[in-house]
Amino acid sequence: MKITAVRAIPMSDPVPPERQHRTDLGTKVKNDAVLVMVETDEGLTGIGSSLGSPPVLCGVVEHDLEPVLLGEDPIFSERLYEKMYNGSRWKPALERGHAQPGDGRRGVTMEAIAGVDIAIWDVKAKKLGIPVFQALGAARDSIRGYASGGWAPGDEAEQELGGYAAKGFSAVKMRVVGRDGFSIENTLRRVAAARRGIGPSVELMVDAHGSLDISTAIRLARRLEEFDVDWFEEPISPDDHPGLAEVRRSTTVPIATGEREFTRFDFEDLFLHRAVDIAQPDIARAGGFTEIRRIAAMASAKGIRLAPHAWGSGVLFAASIHMAMAAPNCHILEVSQGYMPMMNELFVEPYDIQDGTVHAPTQPGLGFTLREDALERFKYIPGPEFVF
Image 1 (cartoon, rainbow, N blue to C red):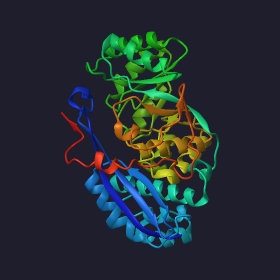
Image 2: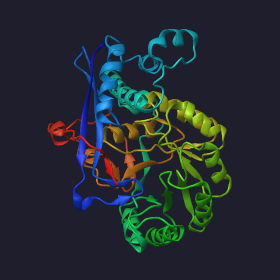
Image 3: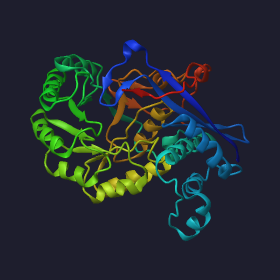
């Protein structure tokens, strides 16, 4: 089997005005993604997805990555990842057994590589006639999910988070910054309301999106301890690993982070600083299946659990499901509760999520089929995803 084409298609999913609200990230007006398609001479096509600037990603995929993949056999997924990551020095890198990456080893290039890698694994598993998670090495065929949302202001958080628990989720996540802005006292009021809504037995996680400074994060983390919070996610800037370690040492609340890290090398630095309890690689950013397998193994050696960040398009959620089924140290998977048709209405087949448990697809590859109208319905719209 040989690769004959690698295509990248920009996509957008507008958020209706009545569903828009302002958070610390701004007001979300649309969701963007890039659909990646790896075509072969045997008629099999793999699909992947990337997050980032669609015009730039499409350029990287079609002008930088496609030429080095044409004629290659997607069964050799590790080889193809090394070709994309190391660039022109891929051959000596493989011969000598150590990475020799080019300049594009982070940022948009890695996001493009991740999308292509997902598509390669999809077509590889289709060739083998098995689901991706089995090709990766299956650890399970179902996993506990957690409902990820929690933007409601003030005491309204009780109803919102309680509603997630009523769906059968045994764990829920809320944002530090709700629709009513941020202060420590305001956050504590919302967390208290959430705990009332879900009761004492449902796990509660809190996500700051990296928006706090170290001292504020420490003050908040210590106050969160009384609410039995299961993790405090991205309390400060993801660039400050020593600062994150300082926050972790200051509290008994476990620290989770990783959705904005690239490759195993970024995670190695997190681990060396002892800055994290739960690693959260995003398959669209960390390097696709190939690199997250490595990150998961490294985390396991440190006694660190895996909880993949799962956001964006349906292809990325599907890929995250497979990763969660394959990594032995993955204990839970994010299930978005936001307005995201491009995640939830992209495929013909529905996700199998019952009473808060996510079940693995059974068909070969990613196990999902794009709807016939998907490319037209989610046609790309130029412009930013957030406005301020």
